[in-house]
Length: 284
Image (cartoon, rainbow, N blue to C red; front, side, top):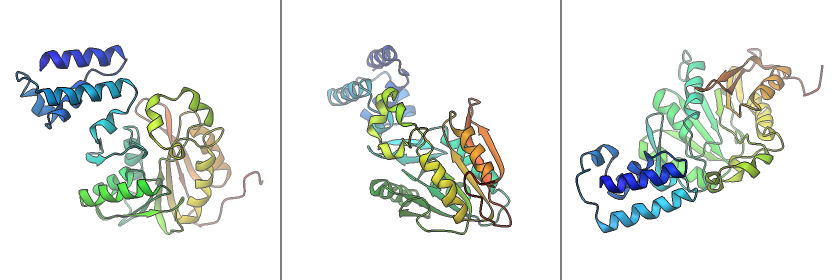
């Protein structure tokens, strides 16, 4: 088994991918955990398992996402099923969850909406961290809605997942949180091959990547209670732009927060406690 792991790891490293992926793929092929694999390193790998892991390796080297090969991903301590065509939760989005939880830390029984939920990652992480919260999630993709509902049921977390755009007509929230599509169209030309297995609508959003986030600013203001919070994950290239626009539209307490690498990743804004609508873009 060690020789096979070394071979797989070397091929991954030659393709500029972490050699650690070999352990995860072989563990799946042997239907065990990574920890269980370490206890079996002296064993021989059967022909069936070896054929499976070699097949998966070839797909991985061709750019197929590791998470889809494994079938699940860890997010905020939850194991979420992932499927081709639905946005795969990224580690940086855990920072969005932590940020949102901090915004409503002192709010009793908060009402939370996750827009563009995908696998349900953000909404489910919120419900796990705040069992007293009432949590809703929306997505325009019926495949994502079905997957989010399946993840919620398997994890035993009561999140209401709805098929619909933006807020799906809901309102009265204390927090609206979202990891919306934020990549500019021009990025398609340089995007890594892994992104080809996720839906374009979950990734790209106009020439500067802000078409959907800009519309979400308007919809969020309508859906939030006075004093309610908005928290968004964006690209480091366009988060400051949206923050400036939000401040110009009358949002309060607008801030850009950095991710763990120090890049401007998250935009936080608060609806006025008086509930007055923000001015139209371009108005004095």
